[in-house]
Amino acid sequence: MPAPVLEVEGLHKHFGGVAAVDGVSLSLTAGRIYGLIGPNGSGKTTLFNCITGVERRDAGRVFLNGERIDGLRPWRIALRGIGRTFQIIRVFPELTALENLLVVTRGHLEEARSRAVELLRFVRLDRLQDEYAGNLSYGQQKLVEFARMLMRDPTLVLLDEPAAGVNRTLLNDLLEAVTQLRDRGKTVLLVEHDMKVVMGLCETVFVLDHGEKIAEGPPGAIQANERVIEAYFGR
Amino acid sequence: MFGTGYGVRAMLQIFMWIALAGSWNLISGLTGYVSFGHVAFFGAGAYTGAILVAKAGWPWLAAALAGGVGACAVALVIGYPCLRLKGPYFAIAMLGLNEVLRALVSYFEGLTGGGSGLSLPTLHATVPIYYAMAATAAGVTLLTYAIITSRFGLRLMTIREDELAAEAMGIDTARHKLYAFLISAVGPGIAGALAARDQGYIEPISVFPLAMTITMIVMVLFGGKGTVWGPVLGAVVLFVAQELVWARFPYVHQLLFGAIIVGVVLLMPRGVLGILQLRYRLPRTI
Image (cartoon, rainbow over all chains, first blue to last red; front, side):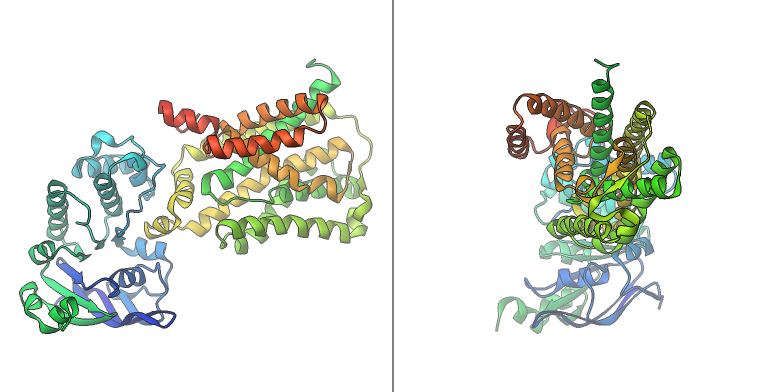
């Protein structure tokens, strides 16, 4: 059993009296695609935010490649190797598509530029590289965000609803890109409401409900799990 | 007109406003952290320079550079806590800083002359000071160019665009904001020390007026925030307009400034160059 890339231990996050994440533990192994599902308000995005340091956890520990990262500033966690996209797109609208990618790089500018151009070609946006990101369509912005996340070559990729609002063709491109990431040894954790996407792509699925992890397993077993069905459809 | 006393004096003022507006643009135009007390750095520089000249006998040019350092030191002390505040809270904190500095210089009478002001020894150096002010304006503008064309400048803009996303992409936003803030204090500090030397007399109300901050903001908004030449354009156009109107209708010019603020915010929030940039797809460096 290889060492886990990401390990979350007993993570808690409360907002006032609401337990958004209530003692969640997970462990992700390198080179696999994981799904994170659950009804609205079950704590999926909050869990992402706690892992990436955007929200401060109330309790619990997070390890990336064996090193503790909880409590670090978000930018430090990003530099350690976690890349993410957001549920609601967060490109830099008044920067061009190319600048959106360049801005997260350090070191040699020409190398960074050629990598950025290459990634924009990978998501088929190279023709629009000098367009302001804010002028691009929703789906294109999503691709810019995806490419920007890849610029730092993260070891762990967190995707918050990559399929939402994306047309079929674009979706297939995105899913293809995610599979390629996995094949290159990256670990992927994605939040997704589209069950077809989750079931087709993920090897292991975690299910959250009211901030608690209620199930974990391969997609087939999850679909048959009674607690999961109950969480989604009620008793 | 250029060779006359009025011409030199007017140009000196224009250069001063270019340095001030350009500096405000560096922090507020690029990172979106709107400073409502930027004249505090002008005042800090004015007092640093004036005290060094009057009490320690420094040459005015060295005192002017020290004014930049003094303003930068104030920015370092105040920037650390204040830049954690967002939006209106930062703006108000900066407004407060200006009032605190004004109260402080009034209180330490022994050093600053308190409310009765500080006189500098007589010196006829308007023309050399004019060149020094021109160099300050050019320096701020060149620095803006260098920053806007660099990845450092782009990172400052990500703070304006989406600070949370910038953090999540590995950008140390706190450090970037602080650097921008420190840089933005230097120009006003030098300009303040030069203006103090030129005028020969300063008092708390003459170097910490809120109206000066407002003027910087209006100049940048008019010319185009976040651009290289916007503050220059805004400073020249509005200064000239103000002089023309002020000479003829002394009571109307406040009204004119108010009208320009409202007009710019309503009709062209990006300012003149911002609009041209978008419409004609001009590069960021205009």
